[in-house]
Image (cartoon, rainbow, N blue to C red; front, side, top):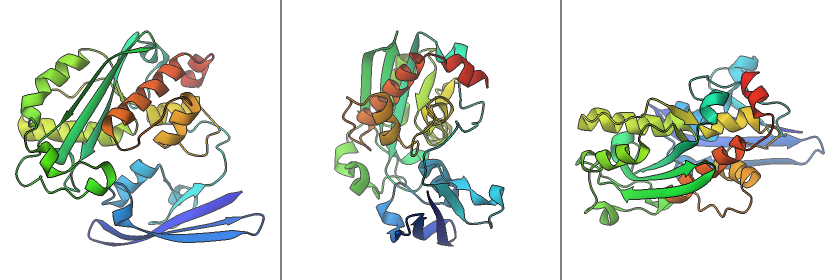
Length: 268
């Protein structure tokens, strides 16, 4: 078994340094340092929790500011927030839409620079939609090009959110929506709506990450590449490309829909 902790130093709400330390029972120890700019869009510890699925060690008696995880396979599904996990009846809706956003910088949802959506009906992908988005002035500095490859040049002629949102809402319709780490994507969507005075955020917004925790026990972690490989091993994920991430999310949910006994896992 390997157990590790992430410790951090910060200045304001910015993560300056992360230190990952693990030790195995076979006495082989390992350690490595990770600087924040090499991670995802990490700008705060709360975002670090949601993006990397770290759990607070404080709940296990650990000190505040230290986040721990188990390096072993999970032995039982984790309980998840009910508002992010669909009921069995909702999960079995014949159609749903998956979504993924990419953002330009640490300023949050208003800096969204790409959205991708995938529609599934009766377990099959039937439609896809993807668009770059042009962030408004003041939110258009591209810090995360190294991560997703999107630059200001690619988005300069793209629609702003208020120009694209009606087509996006039409694509979604009244279907439930899923994202892998829905707390991030729902926040991006909400902040775009608030900034542009649009009303398109779906009421039925669920998390394939949390859903997988409840229904696919035993994975090393529940990051998108891991869950996609478990649920759709034939799919070649191009991680941090919005269209590929949205497709992976769709395949995960469709796979869970087809699982036997999922009703009992969601009712437990």
